[in-house]
Amino acid sequence: MFVIFFLIWIIFNGQFTLEIAAFGLVISGAMYWFLCKFLDYRPRYDLIICKRFFLMIHYILVLLKEILKANMTVFKMIYSARYELEPAVVHFTTTLQSGFARVLLANSITLTPGTITVSLKGNEYVVHCLDKELARDIDNSVFVRLLERIENIK
Image (cartoon, rainbow, N blue to C red; front, side, top):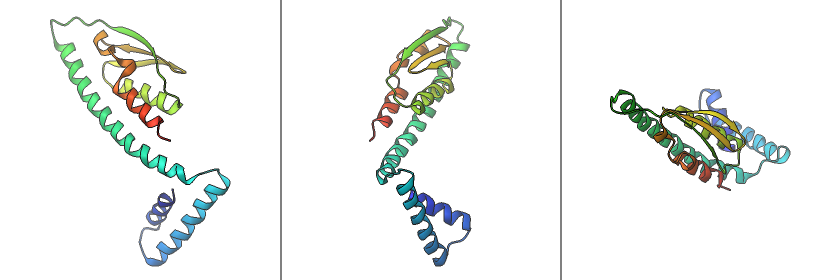
């Protein structure tokens, strides 16, 4: 967090001199001390944020890959004359603890072509799929496994 404060200081100043950097270090240190003293922030949170940051980047890349794969699958389903679509509504639950992870999963499902999250109540999801084949293993998808890994970082 200290580094973020310092970078924001430098960016808002628009230039980098020794005086600005020194004053920025003092201001950033004071803000970080205030965070730790009065807002119950712990330096260990910085380590957790760093670890989760890289996993979130991985999650975004996996999401983009899955969106591309689903686009191709849906394209083949729609334009294939021999394929008969069988829409399905799937109910499943997850073990995700945080509201952020549950909402991110719901949004990831909706962003992936052929599936839409209809409802999310607690850990219970209702998902509409263009075809029952798209609903296969949705409760144990790569999204769920990555979000569980992100949540388990302490």
